[in-house]
Image 1 (tube, rainbow, N blue to C red):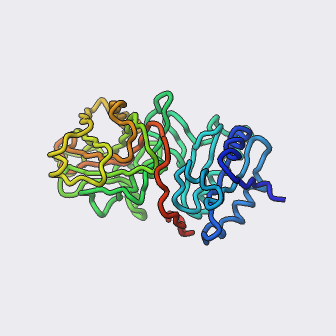
Image 2 (image 1 turned 90 degrees about the horizontal axis):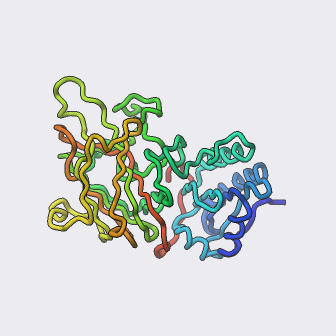
Image 3 (image 1 turned 30 degrees about the vertical axis):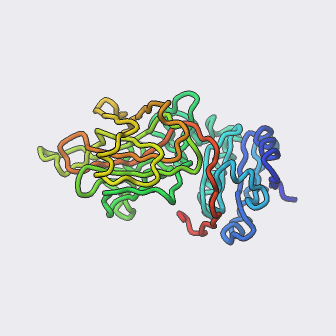
Length: 340
């Protein structure tokens, strides 16, 4: 007999989140081919790792339990979420068996007492997990809400096309050039596309981020890990951001000339002391009263700190509170190839 719990509505799911320390959830649909392909693997994990009141595996049919899908802004299938003590600590979209298996195995280790208090899924502080890396501690009372970024709608202007794209900034894993990652600083793996973003023709970058739910944004964590300059000529070395303008609730990305004519919701100037020496992360604290009911952000890197011609950004995290989910729109299936 299957140990997986089929969720019918939000009330049942809320009760499950209270009764089980960890809840692994599969958001699926009958018409979704990739959902059916990964379903046997999910059932195997459930049969092997389920533990009463500790680890529970659940399935949510998004067409039948629409209130649950709406609460968590599910817009693509399959989507897998892991909850710990009622809070979401991990999300993955797409039928990627390895990613799912690796995440769940960490939970098994925790339930057996060999894991940390968060089982490898950090909910605060600087994380060492590939699933939810953070470059700075979370302020008390707030969460990492980066998962609320609608990756299908992000846009990035003036980025070097040979390096990472806009989605790179929101990757869950530790930057490849982070000191703890074991790779040489400033040198990406030759066989993989670099996992950072650099500006192209000058030092400016313009990023547009729509959100899947309405947010209250407390701060931004910007990670930048440029290599150290060698010799006297530092013009070829990318810089860290210096002046950053943030605009809230814009309908689309701003053009560079357009941004100069529109007052920023907040303008921030970063200095050398703002960057953490170990993680290369600067915490940009926002005027919380100005960033309530936020449905999108535009982040404009106006210039860099130094004499270089380009600016580099490795990761971006949004910290705050997630509110009501926005309209789901048309649900779609995600392919079964990893990364789709």
